Amino acid sequence: MAEERRYGAVLRAWFRETLPAAGNARRLGVLTLIQSLGLGVFLTSSAVFFTRTIGIPAQRVGLALSVAGLCGLLCTVPIGRLADRLGAGRVLTANFLLAAVGFTAYCLVDGFAAFLAVACAIAVLETSAGALQASLTDALVGEAERVRVSAQMRSLFNLGFLGGAALAGAAIAAGTSTALYATVLANAALQLVSVAVLLGMRLPAGAGPRATAAAPAAEAPGGVLRSAALRDVRYVAVALVCGALELYHPLLTVGLPLWIVTGTDAPALLVSGLLILDTVLVLLFQVTVSKGARTPAGAARMLRWAGWALGASCLVFAVSGGHGALLDSAALLGGALVLVLGELYQASASWGLSFGLAPAGRQGEYQAVFSLGRGFQQFAGPWLMTSLVVGAAGTGWLVLAALFALLGLAAPPLVRGLEKARARTEPAPA
Image (cartoon, rainbow, N blue to C red):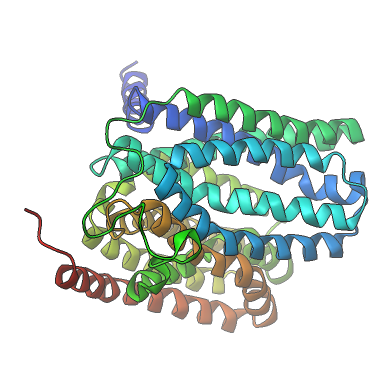
């Protein structure tokens, strides 16, 4: 009985830590759950839907999605600047409305040209949505709570994504076109539900489009198409380092599965097992780990730890091949546990740095620029993982380990240099 009470107390404490506070933070949590549910449904079933239901060849699907990803990156910064002018809530509402139209349009596609057009439109909306939601989080919860709330959102995202993936799995198992069309239309409907949640939020006074004497949001030169944040070289460098450390994502979803199947004696079932383990651990511990990243200095240290942990995981993976099913599985499990630690550190540090290093009143633009760092792993990640992990085997793991460690070492001096530059150029507070 005492044991049950202790476990119950731990569970209640975790629930209190992970559940956002009542008000706008909790509404953000509901919004995250809705969006992640839709994303889980769509991403899990989209490959089958595109190839079997619409009838687009797999190679052409890959080409279209690559072109769409590039469109998304090109449009993210102008949309972020627009959010600084009009307010992130307004732009995000329009984003979700257009996404509902876009996902519905997938059901009307009858050829490659139409598929490419819809894919590009949705990629622009999806790529910009992350920066818009980050900017909205800053406006709604303020400086003191934005990192903590972002961590809570990531835990809730994993929970919603798991639910969506399960629903998509049922649709795929049904094996009918109707079931797959239903997954796409369900995602479109969830975009409209997201709009309803957004309209229920109330921005506190002064939390809409903001301006300061140093960075007037409404009168920034060059309009929405010219970004001063892209000329902030030190900020861009921090964003690129942080985005490159996010290579853990293709490592987990592309490199590691291929390594398990081609380079180890471990059972193929371990691929899904490690992915589920990673998702659950992030759900359980992201909020707790994020406490050390609420200042830029703390976030920079955490980014260094992320690089070291991710590098160490690659060293463990390097010894997981050719030792029999039991030993290989044990090494893979150990490497995955170290990897998720680096993942937790990297995600926490990215919020602390993207929020803490952005000038007041320009979160939309700067969050958009920070998200461009993610583009590195999105474009180069799958190719890099297949080339190193499958092509070079043990040597490839060592190269990855060195890359992660060097990126982690680069983070603190880059952040210190940026903060010193800001101190020289920004006026002192009255």
